[in-house]
Length: 149
Image (cartoon, rainbow, N blue to C red):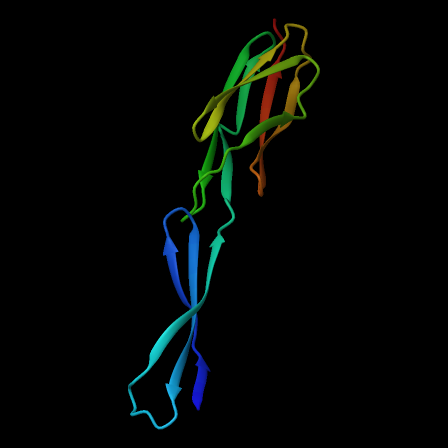
């Protein structure tokens, strides 16, 4: 007769967010001397950690005169133990008199906002959203525009 006891899982963290879990059971034949145990691997599970990250806009706000442009650095920083998956960026909330370009970088982008000479003075808030296959994060920035003259 065999005694079957399920032991705790053994977990191995691997670079890039992969987690290997080995579940095992010990089998001790009835009457076997103490200390003689054999281990049989029953299940190997691989769990990929979510590709979590943070997003920031630097600087958070710029001040320009109408007709000028402003640049921002968009940075995506992977969470500890993960790598950054391919991502898309989108800018929303820009006023009518503004055009935006995103120049991609490995971990973010350079955002350039170009204003029209006819853009009304004011402070405008926009949102940059980064999306991977499983995570979406957003950051807010602002553009303050003064009259062209």
